Length: 135
Image 1 (tube, helix red, strand yellow):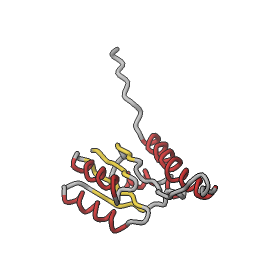
Image 2 (spheres, rainbow, N blue to C red):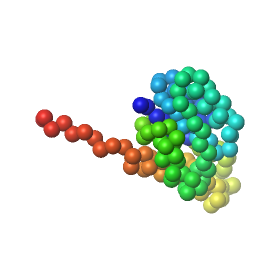
Image 3 (cartoon, rainbow, N blue to C red):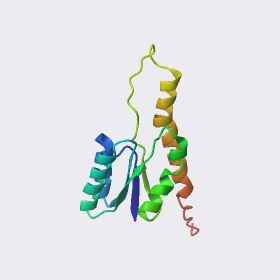
Image 4 (tube, rainbow, N blue to C red):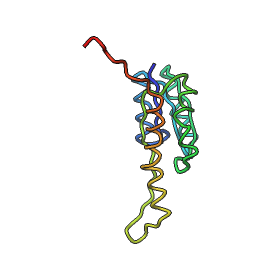
């Protein structure tokens, strides 16, 4: 069974990727931060294709919400996640003159730290590879 978690899947590219993964036979966990209605529309579209879809809210700026996300997706979809799409990001305009420590940290948490933490979580769930001992 193929199961995917797509972050930021309520809108734009995340939406398109979640729907395409469903077309390719994946059940999909549709992550969103604040666009619950959009995420539910994506999940409904996936369900009409005969695939399982759930929505999961998490603030990717809060690592206590990021850390359990892969496990929550796996539990809701009924098995390990086989595909992770780290799509979510924040779009806050900064310049060299306007950037602050706070805006820097928000960008790094959303666009770098959260994908790293999710990748670590997924790696922990991947089964050990089968070694072919015949040569």
